[in-house]
Length: 75
Picture (cartoon, rainbow, N blue to C red):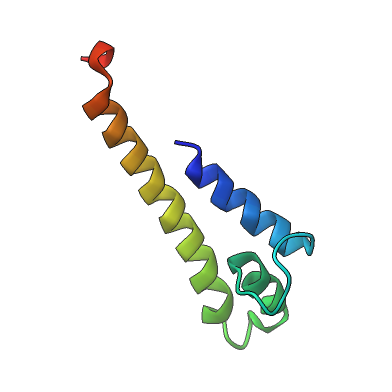
């Protein structure tokens, strides 16, 4: 269940400049580098941000499904 939080923390740290450094790819770095071009090319900013949201949502659904399947007291 905490994997979505870890992804979000990595994105935020990379966006602030203290996470993954530029030769290595990171969604936070992609968002930071393309923030000045959002009026001309909005897809350069929106696609990494939407991907982070979808990854977090999918990890939450997977964690919830695993909790329902493996937790005997929850039934």
